[in-house]
Amino acid sequence: MVVLVKIIAATPPLEDEAFIRMHSLPKGELKDRLDIIFSRGDVFQTFFSMPRKERFNKLEHAGFQALKSTNVFSHPEIPEYVIKIGRRKKDPFNIGRIRVAHRISDCVKKQGFTHIIVPEKYVYQIPGKDEALNNQNYVVLAQKLPLLKKSSNRKMLKSLSEEAIFELLWVIKLCEYYDCYEHNIVCIEGEPDKVAFIDTEPYFRVKNIEARLPRITQYLPEPYNCRTLKDLDILFSSTIIDDFESKEA
Image 1 (tube, one colour):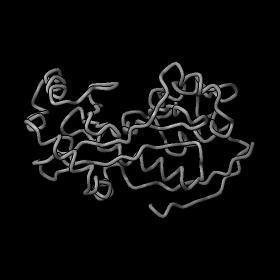
Image 2 (tube, helix red, strand yellow):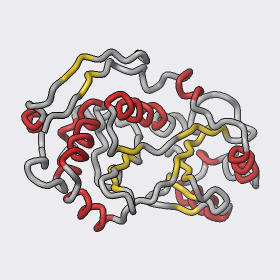
Image 3 (tube, one colour):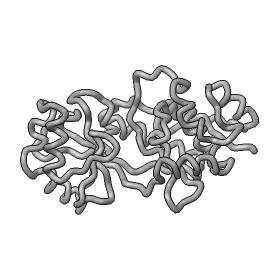
Image 4 (spheres, one colour):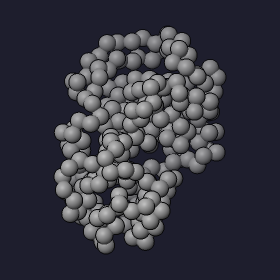
């Protein structure tokens, strides 16, 4: 199988404040709903000064429901989105999800991939907070997708088409996607051959993809269960590569 792949020039740095602000939640009915939810009580006024368990309890009391971790929540008044809250006041990881999500979605569009989905994401400024771009003032809003459960996802990954697998692996390589866990790369329920990159938190501390690549490739059929970047290069050796310079760079 031959897949046309373009080499994409480096995108702006993850901490590019202007870019992130461009992807703030626009005014409208959704923002109005969020403003009401986040204005109730004082949950976020002293959030990062509270012990972690107290934060969790206070959020639940305010109607937020914890999902897979203590920093990802849903709310019954915005069922079509999940809310991602930073773990610490000043770390760049939560807000940086915007940059990585757009890096992947830009790659998908420019390559013409048809099997990869990236949930839309926005930064949302908490009412009453100042404009300094940090986790104390902003959360990330992410589109909620109908994802397969763990066991079903593993089976679906095994049955993906060759084209879908190539696209998945190319996104990992081209976008330097380090968070290669099966709960971050999930197949869509009711849409065979569609795979979503749902967690786009940047991992600056991971020096190479190989540290985590097998976390997802172990569920792919042979010969696609690559363990190293060299394995990927061998797999892609028949791929035609066109030079491509991103206009975003």
